[in-house]
Length: 92
Image (cartoon, rainbow, N blue to C red; front, side, top):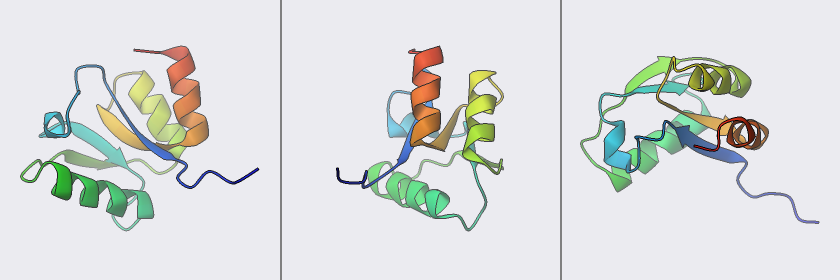
């Protein structure tokens, strides 16, 4: 078996369909200098320039996943296991 090349996903509330929909929305990241935050910012800058989410620091993918499930945040990068868990609990 080959390892998964990218074990991060960005999950968001159902009303966030396009990258630009993240503008002024609550986006949780691990820290200002985390790899996932850097990858997320690069994606937003390239895909939807001018979009500025409200970044919140919530360390730990499982903590960001829980915050997303209870509606405390609008979107977040999460690890693969948390993406699978969220999609099982809330497919929408």
